[in-house]
Length: 113
Ligand SMILES: [Zn+2]
Image (cartoon, rainbow, N blue to C red; front, top):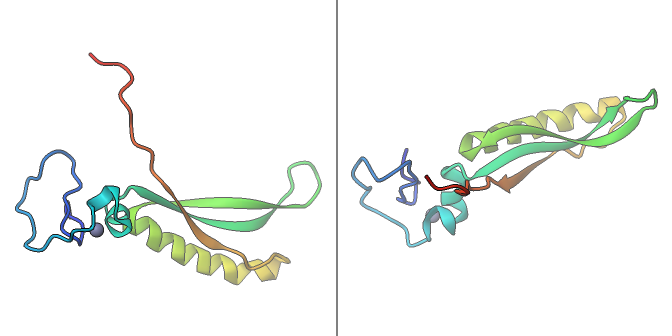
């Protein structure tokens, strides 16, 4: 792992193992969508319509089930979206579950030692 399938190191720290022979000129995790996803800088969720009843009235709301970052998060979100679309119509809901993603924000140093 610490290299993406395009051959870019994504940490932590400096490379601790030899680089693969082939490295794509894709820009690595900062610029390339594939590298970014594999490096875990994108997190995923399943977004879907569901029922809520917090005040005694049934209402439809948009919900997000977060499944995590990187390749594993994407695969979990895909499975969850498929399963959710299967049960929604049985509960008078539109079968609208989809996989959504957002970038994981980077930490910024606000106080130096
Ligand atoms: Zn790449």
